[in-house]
Amino acid sequence: MLLEAEDLHVRYGNVEALHGINLQVRQGEIVTILGANGAGKTTTLRTISGLLRPAQGEIRFESQPIHKLPAHRLVAMGIAQSPEGRRVFGTLTVRENLNLGAFSQTDAGKIAKTLQWIYELFPVLAQRHNQLAGTLSGGEQQMLAIGRALMANPRILLLDEPSLGLAPLLVKAIFQTLWEINEAGVTIVLVEQNARAALKLAHRGYVMEVGRIVLEDRADALLANPEVRNAYLGGE
Image (cartoon, rainbow, N blue to C red):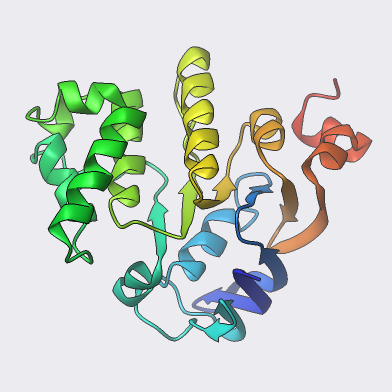
């Protein structure tokens, strides 16, 4: 198992945000986490990536406990996150943002190869490599945020709402690229409000409600589940 969370409890002060969740991610999978706003999806990703500390429970990466390690150590181990809201550095260029993503890398040849791959995935970033990130469109900033995470050469990529605020055609393009990234060998954990698109892309999924996992199944089974369809797919 590549990644496991067991009996994970996370608190913000006296408020418990995660109530003992368990999840597993196998090498090569795309796993999606669905749920309404406030369900605990972002908290789950932030805890996996080391930005939050669990009050109880354990996270393991390749069977090694990682829940007490700082975020930069996890990046070096192969866990990278593209955060909700993109969080690009607006006063830096596209290329400078991408270079920051490679802070844990030391092999110049490998960095150059990864950069070329990202430019192939997102040609617009190559065209705008000297442009300030703050002047990019929302879709271009999302591509940059994903590219920056990929510069760390992650084994597992955590994505928080990559389609948020994007036009449908751009959402389709982003999800096609996520499929290509997975085909290249990167495992993906995807938090996404667009449940239909996420389940069509993913191999398996978890459904969260108020800090608990209430359903887990193959993605196609969740897509056909009447409860999921009524709650997240408009009952279609």
